[in-house]
Amino acid sequence: MSEVEEFEKSLDAAKSLFVRGISKHVTAEQIVSHFSAAGSINEWCYHPTNRGIIYVTYGDEIDAQNAVRRLHQSELLGVTISVRPLNYNKNIKNNKSMIERDSIITRNIIKKQNKTKGEHVAYANHGMLINGDLYPIPQGRYLLQLLKLSLSCDFHVKSLLSQLIFTKSNNNDNNKEISESYACFNGMLKAGNYLGINWSDETVQVNVYVLGDGVQPFTSILLAALLPTHYRIYSIDPLLKYSKEQLGEDNVLAKRINMYPCLSEEFEIPVDDNMGISVLIACHSHAPLQQFWDRVRTKKIAISMPCCGKDISLLSMSPTLEYEDYEVWSPKRKIYIYSSL
Ligand SMILES: C[S@@+](CC[C@H](N)C(=O)[O-])C[C@H]1O[C@@H](n2cnc3c(N)ncnc32)[C@H](O)[C@@H]1O
Image 1 (cartoon, rainbow, N blue to C red):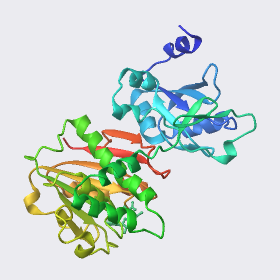
Image 2: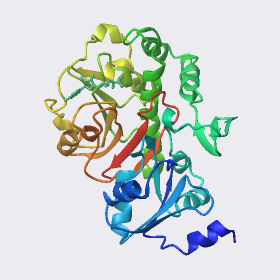
Image 3: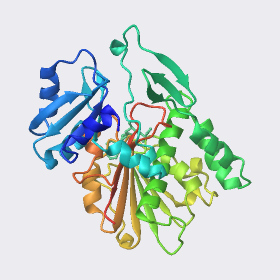
Image 4: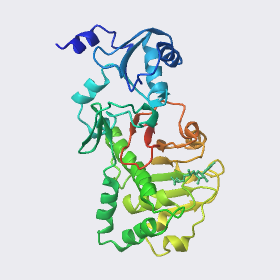
């Protein structure tokens, strides 16, 4: 057993956390103050060989779990830190599922002020290695998926996708938006795998509500191209300015996109939707997710990728899954999946 393994074994695993991303400039007082925000700390110490890592032990398990929820991806002296249960990485290594693997690498933002001379930087296949830590770089997987989809022979799919590619948002190319919308679709797939939902089961009616979809119903359009034809899709945003004609009136896939230029609070959830599953998508949305969630009477899941107004896109319950999607070309790429199932 190595020195580090021996040391970790001496800690109380249920109450101890493994924290990466500690800047050399952080003082002991700052560490105590940061972690005390989640509960009372018994002790903390540096990793035996790496000063960028610390162990924090709380007085009880609840505080330790609370700290993971509140402080993972928080900033300490300008650096985003990773706060994980002590045996988190070991558990993940034993469980090779896709869902879990996406969460392994948690430190994502490199702040310039943290770059000091002497750091070792190298390129790896999928990212940059800085002092041995891997910082993933998007690989463009979603664009490749979009390309594959656009090569399909289906005219309706092609016509929908052309709107994502050729209709520009904010005078920019839509790479970033496409990656964000795809990440939400991917979140749906992950939720399905994790919760045992077969999304292509035609006997289950699925209603997808895209809250804060934007001026163009971007995520709804992508979902219409990707999801089974019996799904109903609702695009809800007060700024929505898109016409049925733009969607393509004859497009059988687009026909099930229902556009509502209103606040999500004002949206009346259809009464005949008391069966099946409702999926709430909040892709960098500013709509109050909890308010909508509480009004949905069916079984439901929510896929949320918050941006600036983070709190408005989170639910009060704990997420079933949370992970960073490194294929999203935005630093706001953390996905939260909630479920009532
Ligand atoms: C940052 S934009 C995101 C747009 C799009 N989802 C995207 O990723 O490009 C946030 C959107 O939330 C919308 N929004 C704000 N409050 C809302 C509400 N109460 N209900 C529905 N949409 C809302 C805004 O109009 C805006 O289009």
